[in-house]
Every structure is written in structure tokens, then in C-alpha cells.
Length: 310
Image (cartoon, rainbow, N blue to C red; front, side, top):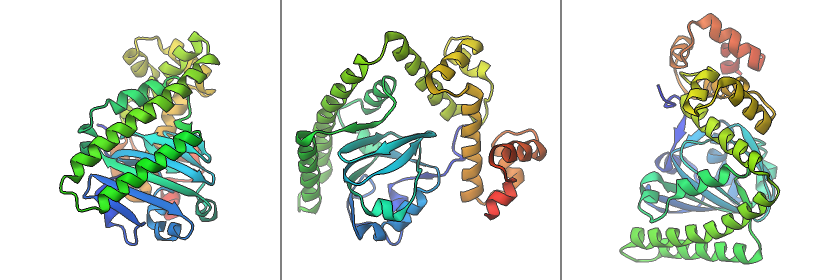
């Protein structure tokens, strides 16, 4: 079983929210939006949804002009500061880790949401860029200098103007524009990576790379596979050596990471789905309800029923 149990949102679902943030959209392929001041009030439905862990079935790019908040990607918390540009690919578990409307309300940011189908049409291996990058440094937020920020704003403004125009081939035009912006972003990303490499030894680079591969596998298989032996075999390592590398890279053991993903999945099902406890136990491949109850309470301090009611 894969991770279909976790709540997944896409552009269509966001467009169905009422009220929604001011946005410029290209059907269900692309949304451009701004969050600034009172516009946050109009995006309450979207922000409320991100209070809980979800997967976005598409790509997210946003850059922050002003403000500060934090976001969780696959259980890692990242601080998003002014002039940060963040990218997120399909499959990641995303959540606003410090949801506070007054804090978000101080922010000024632009965001781009793109579907898998739209991004597959551009001439760039977007996934490869992010996978290579994240294996070398742990923060998916890159910092833009003044020139980068001005250029990013120009791209956003141009894309918005195209969406508002009477152009017939908007999708093709925007696809080319996104391809161009991705290459610009790659230059910024490469600069950041080169700086990161200066402070990392070859061994730490390899350790971080294996840790990211471990997390990617856990993200995909945690519903059904919870032994280090499974992940070690996938990575052609011994369980003991993999455990050592994970601890070295993150300060937390491999089993603890696996348990954290399972708890995240369980919370998501309890919050969003109408499955009863027995069905959730089955979906998460626990042997019985008793084992699931003990596991959940040990990690959260509440029973599944108490969490759902709360």
C-alpha cells in the first residue's frame, strides 16, 4: 500500500474553497497568488487547511518579501525569512508549523502553484534539481539577493499580466516563462550549494545524501514497512550502519523517524477521513486496535478517539 491515505490537495480543490485568496489562474494547471495584509483574511480557508499535514499534488514555489514564519516539510521545520524562495515537489508532507494569523498577516509573499501535468511540459528536470540540492543542504529555502529578488518579482508580474491578457496560447507562453525562471532559479540554487559545500566535508555530504534517500523511502513506504532492515536493504547498507548514519545526520534514530511518519499519517486520517478506528488500523497495517491505541497514545499522550474529538 502506498501513501494514498494521507490527505492530498490539488489546484482543483483549492479553487473550490470559498472564500479563496485573490489569484490568477490557468484552469487547474497554474495559480499565481499574493498574500499581503488584509488579503490574508481571504485566504483563511487555505491557511487553515495547512494547519494540518497534507500533500500538495503539484509544485509550490513562493518567495517572501516581508515577514517571517515556519513551515514543516516531511517533519523537518524550516524558518522562512524575508527574501527566501522555497520550492516544494509532489509527495512532500507540508504543514504550517507555527500557524498564527497575526504572524502570517505581517507577511508579504508571492506564490505559484503548478500541477504535475503543467510542470511535466517544461524542458527541465525539476525533481532532479531539488533532489540533488536537498542531499547537500538541509534547508529548501534559498536566500535571494536584491538582484535576484527584483528579477523574481519581474517574472511574477509578467506571468500575472499574461494571465490577464487576451493571449490565445497562454499555456504555451507560461510554460516557456516557467522554464526560463527555473533556469534562473537553478543559478541561484547552484550558488547556494557551492557555499554549502565549502563548509561540508565529503563524508558529511555523503551522510546527508543517504539520510535524504532514507527519508524519501520512509515517506513512500512507512504505511507498510517499519523495520530498518527494509530500508537498509533498499540502500544497500546494513541496518546498524544505516541507523548510525541517520543518527549522525539528524540526531534522531531511524525508528523514531519511521514512527513520526506513521503518527503523522494517523493524525491525518483521524482529522480528515471518515474512516472508523478499525479501518484506520487496517489502512496503517497495525495487527489490531490494541496495538494501534498503545502506539498512538505513547507518542501523543491521547488515544485516537480523544485526538479525533479534540
